[in-house]
Image (spheres, rainbow, N blue to C red):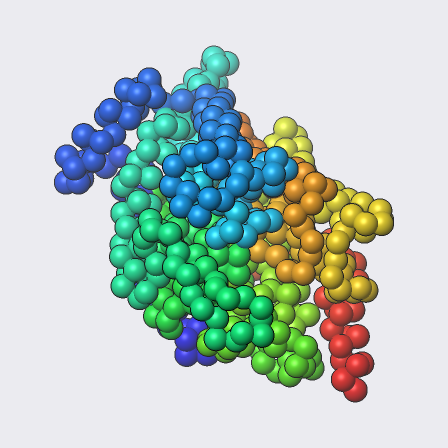
Amino acid sequence: MTETLVILLTSIALAWPLGLYLARLMRGTPMRIDVLFHWIEKPLYRVLGVDPNHSMSWRGYVLAFLISNLVLAVLTQTVFMTQAWLPLNPDNIPNLRWDTALHTMVSFLTNTNQQHYSGQAQLSYFSQMTGITGLQVITPMMGLALAVATLRALFAKAPTSVESGAPVRVTVGNYYADVVRLCLRFLLPLCLLWTLLLTWQGVPSTLAAGPQATPIDTSAGMETQKIPLGPVAAMVAAKQLGANGGGWYGPNSSVPLENPTPLSNALELIGILLIPIAIIFMIGSFTGRRRFGALVFGCMLGMSLLSTFGSLWLEGHSATAASPLLMEGKETRFGAEGTALWATLTTQVQNGSVNGMQDSMSPLTGMVSLVNMLIGAIWGGIGCGLQQFLVYLMMSVFLAGLMTGRTPELFGRKLETPQVRLLAVLILLQPITLLGMTALTLAIPGLAGTSNPGFHGISQVFYEFVSAYANNGSGFEGLADNTVWWNLSCALVLILGRFPILIIPLVIASQLAAKRQAPQSAGSLQIETPTFALTLVCVIVVLTVLQFMPALVLGPVADHLSLTLQGA
């Protein structure tokens, strides 16, 4: 419990000044560090052929986002398919199979880092440094850029030409300038600091080939064993700070080389929370509505505390917590509580890294992780977490308007049919995708490849798709997921879970920005209040937990009951 409080309080304390800096950065406020970064940024803008001072419409912003993703997709796929012939491959690792390469590319392009491969054995240093770590830096900042653009539109000044009927052009900033600034001035300096701290703690940071060791246990039948190394520290820093989660090693941060000490464990946990919380602190200063920032922070913190302490209790005191079957994948260096804490935070943030196996959590702890990912806005991923929260906010405003007999308004602008239709697309897309793909996989013999029959097998399949859709990337291991079916189906789910949630809220906010803003009055819906915050949390529960209740009952709940009966 002490560790949990220290991690949360330290993360919040560090995120506060970082959020204020982020607000100044995205407002374009002049700072002393401008002289340091301008000489790097200006050549980049010339290479890209863009004017950083040109503000784009939402269409231009989204088009630039999609084009940049397409370019990165082609380059990354090429690297994975040709790594055997590229430099920095001292272990002579062959090219990835086409479907594994495709899934890996889509996974890292969507800031998910779902891994159907074992990094240390199937990727060269060049692939890890460019296709993996490169995307771990760029893609979270792409998501954050779209979230910032959405805030610009949502809190834009009321247009003066609406009454005359003239067309209104709403601008949301320059996509390329936003991404470049966020990468160079925000994430990369943090990654450098975390890399140095992790290297100090013993995480490998080398380009040399791994050494050969002689196993102590000769009964394993191996005369020598190769210890894989590489520039691990830099990737671990990016995976944690960027809400990525994909590890250098297959077992992720449960490997001592990737997470060697209690201090490195704490640094990595703080890295998971730091930027998502900083984004929430950014909101008040960036928009000028500090009460709105407090609303977002209060809702997310409340859900986070409920989820975190619920998981810790379930893992330590539920009926199945003491079962020896559940110790198989626990990280004994940090204890069951330390493993449960990481499992909870990594699914709240959509990070996906682990320091133990999610599959070895008690069934109800696994259910909490599933619910965290289904909500997607308990801190949430970088950018997409805030976008998901804004979707819940708009739906709550719409429902509150219906219940009180008022026209739904958000910050003085009416939510009308076009906006509600777009919201409905996002709300319905999640259950249609997840339940449909889970049912299809379980219905066709041989597709699932589960290692556990019965209820736990259902949880394994459902978790894999939920993790992909939530841009999380963790998994219930034991699933034979490196097949053509799993690679292609998860690639589709990854795309559906990433791009709509980033783009559609920006479209809605831009549509609202073009409308006349009504002045606040006694009859206006007050959203920056505890009452509305409670309404918002209830809407989140209804839209996520209740609609997936049958899947949760057939999976983790039934699994819990079966283990309880076995132990009776």
